[in-house]
Length: 238
Image (cartoon, rainbow, N blue to C red; front, side):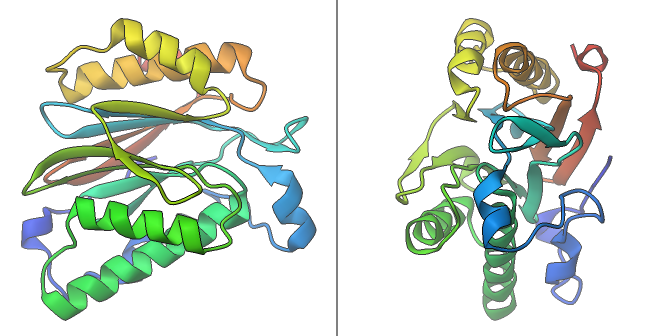
């Protein structure tokens, strides 16, 4: 699965509409209703790493019912929400979809009013405000992006806390993934090197966390845009 966008600095305001960033049909389950919100959880292991080239984000592909039954094996848990920014999905599927739609709309509105893309730090603050004030069902996403100020990875907690770091992990498989990431991460990674490290961390989590599994999605963020690819076989990356 591929998605490539032109440079944020070359964006035509007429082309920068919310539908550009709508998920592809079938990328997420179409779930609705109060009961569905309670049981359809993405479980998840998500990893974000800053690199010399930009940012790499990796996620697994599994959605589960209450953490006990695999309801979907091909969930894309990372989505583009900004010309040079992407966000992971953690928590209930419906809540994550709502969270992404709200952020995309605000990014679009900001650019329409000001004639330039929102900075990644401003987007992280906005995401934290949404997480704290909105009913998004315990979302704990990673935001990664590139702007004039540099390459950024933020983790956003359900209470609205926003923390920037060189790398971070969220989701039910974080303890296992962190062990791998701590061992393999080093400063100065390229995007290609970081994709291997991030995929390795997700693979380790998949081995032990029942809420994570079925492959890996990798998002590569640079100043030229966002490219997202899914891999059912970890050997395609490692």
